[in-house]
Image (tube, rainbow, N blue to C red; front, side):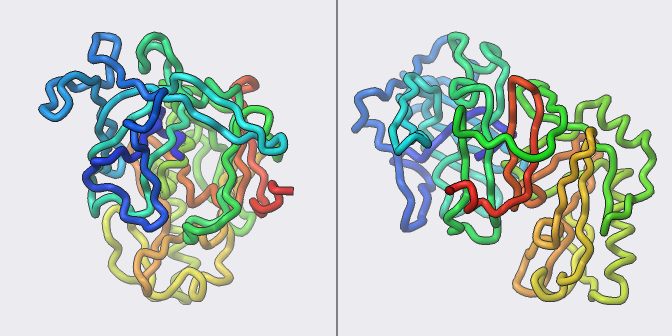
Length: 340
C-alpha cells in the first residue's frame, strides 16, 4: 500500500519479471468477465500508445521515488472486499487499475511484491479518465492501517481498513491535500523527551511549503536539511562512546557496526511532534535500519526540498486518515488488538 501514489496495479502474466515468491498470486485477465481494457483515447493521460505487443490498449507507466517503475495495460475491473460484518462482501465496479507486464528498478523487484495499492486521494478528472476518482475515495471518506513490523514480512496482524471498518483512534493533527498527496505540519523533534534546538522558523517554512508528506510507500524519514542536521548531531553525540561508526552507503549518513536489536538497545526514543500536540514516538527499530547483518544506519535522510514521514517511523501505530474532517490520527498499539 502506498499513500504516495494513486494507482492500483497488479502482476498480470506474462510479466517481466513476475514475483518469484512461492505464495505470489497473479491476475489472469483473460479469466475475468468484468475486466475491460481502457481504450487509447484523449481521456487517458496515463497512456503511452504504440506498444508493439498491445497496440489497441491504453497503456500506463508509473515511476516511484526510489527508482522503481511499473508499466502495462490500463483497465477497469470489479473489486470485491470482505467487510467487518461477519465476513460479508461488497463490490466496487469499474475500478481503474494497472495490469502490469513489466517492473523495473534498482536491485530488481522484491520477490514477495506482486502489486501496489495506491491510496492517494487523487485530483479527480485531472488524474483519472471520465471524471473517475481513485479507489480510496470510492470506498468512503476514511481509511486506516496498522503495520506491526517492517522487518517481519510474514507478520500476520497487519491491517488496512476502509469505510465503516476504519479505526480513527488516538490523537489527531490537521491533514492537508496537495495534488492528492497527504501533508502534515510538524512542531518539533525530541529525543528521550527533550526537544531538539531547532528554530521555529524551520518548521514554519516547511509548513508554508506544505512539504511534510505522509508516505506509507517510503521506508525512510526524509527531513529538511536544517532539521536533519540537528537530528544527526544528537545521534552522533549519544552514540559516540557506545557505537563503532562505519562508512555509510548513500543517501544514509550515519552507520554503525552491529545490530539494531543488540547495539541499539537502550537508545532513547525519537519523538516526531505534530501541530496540535500529537507525538509519534519512534523506537530504535523505526529509527535505525539494518542494512547488512552487521551494519545498521540512521533511517533519517537529508532532504533539500520535501520532507517525508515513511513507514519505518509509522510501524507499531494505527494511523487513521479522515478525509471529511481532514485529520490524521495516531495510536500506538499492537495491531493484533484490532482483531478483537
